[in-house]
Figure (cartoon, rainbow, N blue to C red):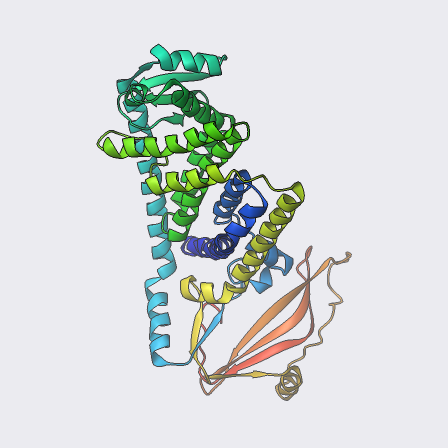
Amino acid sequence: MTENIFIFAAYSVITGSITCAIILLIKKIVYNRTSAAFMKYLMGFGLISFVLPSYMIYFLMEEAETSFIIGDGVPLIVVNSNLTEDIYNFLDRINIGRILTAVWATGIVIYIVCLIINYIKTIRAIKKYSTPAVGKTAEIFKFIEKSERVILLMSKSTAQPYTIGVRRKYIVFPVILENILSDKEIRLILMHELTHIEKNDAFLKIFIEILNGINWFNPFFYKIKKGYCFWTEADCDETLNQDFDEETRRLYANLLIKVAEINIKYKNVLASFLALKRKNSMTRREELIMKNKKKGTKMATVAMSFMALCVFCGAGYAAKEADYAVYGVFGSDKNIVREGEFDVLTVDEAEELMETRNIDNNSGYSETEPKHIHTWIDVIITEHEKLDNGGCIMIYYNSKVCEDCGKTQTKDIFDVETFSVCPHKEAII
């Protein structure tokens, strides 16, 4: 079963990719009707869609018999050319599912280890190059944040301010900026970082990085994660700008570009992996700040949320419908036959065939069966029989089986397949 684990990841990739592709196509429309905060959570929902197994709902609704990955069925892969047959046989021979599962698991471990190492490096840099804040930055901070829930540190190891910490929150403020920025600019930066803390963004970004470890191979995930990081910053900008006048708003927007330029100038200085450092992102945020768009209505937010949920459910259904194709490529147990090597009979033709072969398909209860009330469940029973000419017949019965005693009651023939050459493995016979 371990070789089939990657198949579940493949289903999730289908679900997440469809969901996020549609989100990216309509993101401008959604933002115009909602807010940066909603866009942040919408992008987060898109990232989570890569790991939530919504397709399982459809598998369970239609019962295990309809799925090769959670049921006992073995798919019959029909090919129409020698090249296609050779490819499928090669993938089956090397057990591609097991290989990809091993590669995927190894990638997850490597990504998480690198994430931990980067985080430890950041913490060590803070401890080595940072000291408790003093001077004008400390005075401004005390005026804004009167509680002791957040610790302000001054650091020589970064040119960009950032917030870090899960249980205990730290704002790391570059010493470089204290000598360059005005008191009002320092106050705006500290207010921005405190807004991140109120929204618990540091923890959420770490959670997203863990999800990224699971999807390290998926470039689509990185695209959505970039959008999530952008809207996280834009959300803080939008929250602060609600109470700003035009002059303060312009100062705040110019401050973003100034900090980005300083960070580029001191690019040799260590910066946190949690920070958003690209200048073009700062320019885009500046545009949104000066636009000062009003937040959307609650009705629009509810409507867009419902739309996102519908997209996600539809993407899960698409992943479920790909069960045959996905398992055909990555599954560990399948039968590969050439097109034209078998015929599928109708029920009437199958019944006529059964009569000629004297197969009784109307068996009932045995007089010697244990006396109890049967609890019947519907199942499909498969019967395989080889023919003298090297072919075979697969007979499928709509049947009932008792959950308590295992008694089987055959009802009628569901379908029959005949093969000129038997493609089935010995384990099935």
